[in-house]
Amino acid sequence: QQQVKQSPQSLIVQKGGISIINCAYENTAFDYFPWYQQFPGKGPALLIAIRPDVSEKKEGRFTISFNKSAKQFSLHIMDSQPGDSATYFCAASMLVSTLTFGKGTMLLVSP
Amino acid sequence: NAGVTQTPKFQVLKTGQSMTLQCAQDMNHNSMYWYRQDPGMGLRLIYYSASEGTTDKGEVPNGYNVSRLNKREFSLRLESAAPSQTSVYFCASSEPYQETQYFGPGTRLLVL
Image 1 (tube, one colour):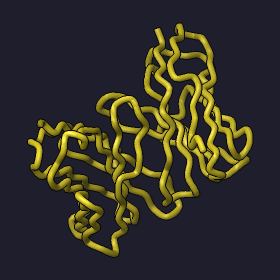
Image 2 (image 1 turned 90 degrees about the horizontal axis):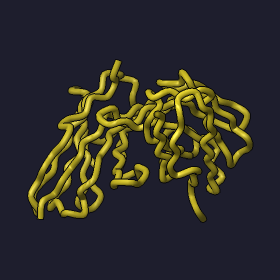
Image 3 (image 1 turned 135 degrees about the vertical axis):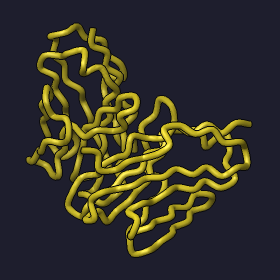
Image 4 (image 1 turned 90 degrees about the vertical axis):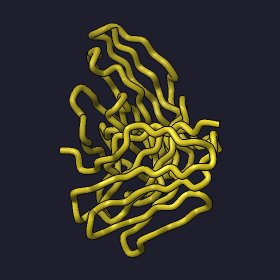
C-alpha cells in the first residue's frame, strides 16, 4: 500500500516558469514532510521540509504548501532554472518512524 | 569530512553469486539506512539501523541481510543474487527519525 502518492511522474517547464509537484498522504499520524532533490548519478539531498503546524514554508525560490485537511502538500519552484532539472521526491514520517518516499518526479527545465 | 561513502560504485554479478555492499559515515550519526531505487518506484527502504547494535526490516527486506559493524559502518549483503535485485542502492545516515538523511553516491548493481 503506497502511503505517499506523488504527481506528476515527469514535468517540463520553461525557464522562468513555476514548477509544481504534488503529494498526497493517507496516514494522518504523519507529522514531518520533507522534499529531496536528486541530480543524475548522485544521491538524494534534502531540499526543504515542513511540519503540519504551518501551512507554508519558503526557502529562496522553493516553497512547500501544506493542506492538513486535504492531506496534501506540494512543492513550488519559482523562476525555474535549467539547474533545477532533477528528480524530486516527497516523503513523510511519524515521530518514531522511518521516511516513506513518493515515487518521484523528473523535472526538466528547458532553456 | 567525506559524509557517506559507498563501495563499490558499480558491480556486475551473475545469478546466485553473493556480495556485500559497504557503507561508512563520518558524521557520528546514530541511524543508518539502506534503500534501493528502481525506475518509477522511488526509494524503498530495505533495512535500517536506528542505533548501533540494532537492525530492522524496511519495506523490501527479502533477499538481503545487513550488519551494523560499528557506529560508522553498515553493510548490505546479497547471499544469492537474483536479476530482480538489479538496482541502484543508496546508503544514508541521520540522527534518529525526523532529521535530515544524508545519502551516499550509490552503488549500481547489475545481476545477469
